[in-house]
Length: 166
Image (cartoon, rainbow, N blue to C red):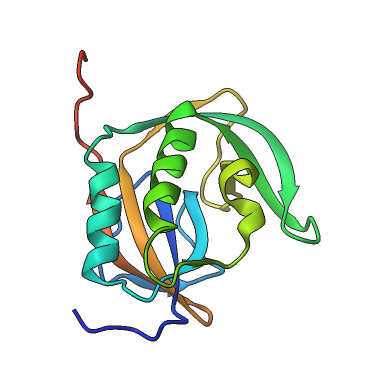
């Protein structure tokens, strides 16, 4: 895989519907998703980044999420979101953070949204309506490269592992 400039930003998201590797879309028109780890850069990405995220995903089946209240996010509190309650998402966030933060050249674009600052949410999408207390399953994870106004899926994974004892 060809290396991308060290300043390339990435994000890892959980999705309700599959999105294939190579898919690009305008960053203002994301499909419904919950961010697992917010924007970051690393100097050794490509295959190593894909393997790292795949390793964490191999331990998970579909993620169960319960929708909670609406809120406003962003530095200026102008982004409408629906909060998500899920121990699965918090556990996956911590595992991803543990492995990503030790990769060479790691830098979080905004460290306030990592670890203790992580608050799972789904940014409001006009085509998706969920009510407070709705429970949904998220079966897909994507590593997405962010370049200007464009988001490009670099790795697409399906969560299909059955946890022990299931």
